[in-house]
Amino acid sequence: MPLLECREITKDFGGRLIFEGLSFSVEPNQKIALIGANGAGKTSLLRIIMGEDDDFSGKVIRQSQLRMTCVAQRFQPPPGASALDCLLEPITELRARLAAAELAMDGADPEALSAILEGYGHLREEYEALKGDDAEDEGRRLLERAGLGASADSLATSLSGGEANILGLLRAILCKPNLLLLDEPGNHLDLWGQAWLEDYLKNLPMALILVSHNRWLIDRVAQKTLSIEGCTLKEFPGGYSAARLEKLKRAAAAGAGWQADRKKLERLEALVKRFAQIAAARPDPAWGKRLRARRSQLEREKAQARQRPELGEKAMDLSFQDNDARSTFALIVQGYSKAFGQRTLIRDSGFDILRGEKIALVGRNGSGKTSFILDLLAQANWDSPVLRVSPSMRLGYVSQSQDTFRPERLIREEFESLGARPQEIQALLKRFLFEYEDLGRRVRELSGGELNRLQLARAVYLKANFLILDEPTNHLDIASREAVEEALTEFDGTILLVSHDRFLLEAVADRVVFIDECAFKPYEGGFSEYWRDVGLSRLKEIDASKGLGNRAQALKGGKTAASDSGKTKEDEKRQKLSERIEELEKDREMLEKQAKVAIEGRDFALGRKKAAEIEALERLIEKLYQEWCA
Image 1 (tube, helix red, strand yellow):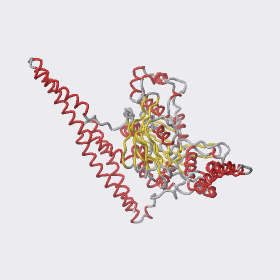
Image 2: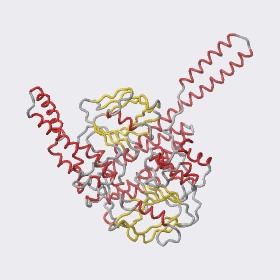
Image 3: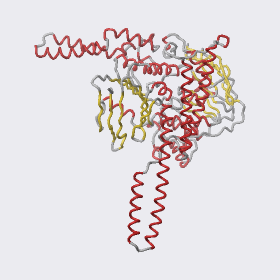
Image 4: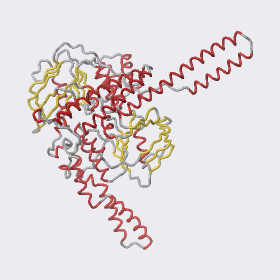
């Protein structure tokens, strides 16, 4: 029996339809991803499910045993409370209500006492179900598992943004729901924190509805994907990658039907035109009758004809300037150091970037990635002894803090200050999903996703051949992330990329530079190889006060790097399997692009063929994964 059913849910806001006729169910322990473009209505649907919004049509049917909790995008701990106090707050409130009921029993008349006892009984049942007497011990165990054990008695407000969000998740879990709603739970977590979160959510003994643009998280956790597209809901088995493949297959199949209907309409239109010519030339009532019959048939067929399939939401039309630089090196870093007071982030270290290289700069939160980028932008020039940037490099910067624009200025004014003419501005920003009216908006009025799109538009206008990108896909929906990914993959200039988006890192980076032990450490290989050989081995148990950087015991199936001399035959076999899987996944990405191009070009037969090839490849990849995990 489903925990929750939504039947024909329709919602509008101020006369604008948000979604229409949405129906789905949630089974016990089922993990569901809810995806869609920014503004598609995902958060609105969560509020309806939670019972916080009753301004809709349709039905939400909740099982009598349903216990539901929602964790918002950002958790704000109360001031003055320790992490443990914050975690236990729902239990503490329940204890206070029980104590108040016990006090109310003294001196109450028999009639009032009966009502108080009934209420007390319900509270006591709830308290026992939550194992309230053991809450402190369980709370400390949860904090330890999340790497926050040393922060249990520290102020919750001293936690980082990612740690605070994890605290909000743990607080919800302590209340023992059987359905957990999560809105972007991976925000502010580094790669190691996200790896922990993926494994933790996957193994939670409860149902989940996960709203996220994190494709890797969805793939690891979701058993079903719900996609809000054009006010309707589409359901796909599996995670993001499985949903994307299924979408291609459905589009290819629907396209063949659309083509057949289009040819039929073309024949009917030609027939109506011919009959009209005959009826005009011959004053015979029979031909007029035939013409009216054919016109009626044409109108019926038009009404019943299948629509041309679409592959998803509208994405940015994004492309960067080709690399016209002539220098050998784009960047040379020598003897760079960075410290804040007594805390050293990087000490006397360096690395090089050749022209045309695409480098991922990775490291735990707080390791100094953004600080280094800010110094690079402020201090780098060819004459610098520490941060040398080739004179032929034109820098394009996307800031994680989104401070490349002045908040009080209009969008139009920001681009005019770069020398852009009005027509240029309008044409450029249209490619980044901005309307003409948006040019008169102030920068401070923009959402996080809009600001990132605007930063990317600025880099395109500047014809940058060296892109310095600090979390460029933050706040972007999946369609926009894929557009950024494709543009950066095709860009033949130089890229220095900081990101926690694993799909982006694996698609773009040729080489990795990671920050560890206060030094830059180059790795000759792409991100997936780095993560296999180095990243997972960084997940050592360190001092828990350092927070979400220690996840070794939480990760399952992780492979740590081994020295060549210490490798067993089993290690070598697993590495070969891993390398083969990586090759096949790259083949799959290429086939998906070919299928998408074929369908958008109306070659639906080729689209079906490519979709079948992808499906066969998926089966082979899954088989190799099973061998790797054995």
